[in-house]
Length: 166
Ligand code: IDP
Ligand code: MG
Image 1 (cartoon, helix red, strand yellow):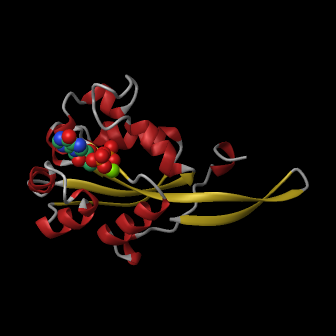
Image 2 (image 1 turned 90 degrees about the vertical axis):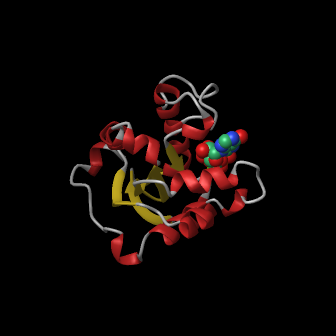
């Protein structure tokens, strides 16, 4: 989700792209007690939490979320797994948050995700890679609308924002 914001810096108005992205801690991340660790990484990076809920997704929701992969051999297992237990669904906001979140998360395959990334530090199997993050603007919009109602999105200002964004 793209929010265009005009800011005033050094005698010029510039346009800054504030984005929103959908992040989900999958059932393996929840079961392994990694919720606070994962949320902490996004908070400490400086992004703003806009929405958060824990739910056990229906199969229908999991199928829609991973619809792009429906022809892949792992699709049925993936849908079963995602709907097998609690998922922590979130929306995070900030400059270029979609790409930054993908970097914080790390590569899909844990053997290829760098140490220091969430998957690089906490995962060893592609089918148990603990976290999801939208991969672009269109998917972020689609996924935020799929998992959340407009009313769930909290519009608030970070009080010390001038120490995060110039
Ligand atoms: P992403 O989560 O990094 O965006 P995608 O390619 O979109 O990766 O795949 C979605 C999810 O499907 C992955 O996070 C992983 O859980 C699962 N997945 C992808 N490829 C495989 C595979 O080859 N075997 C088993 N599961 C897979
Ligand atoms: Mg993906």
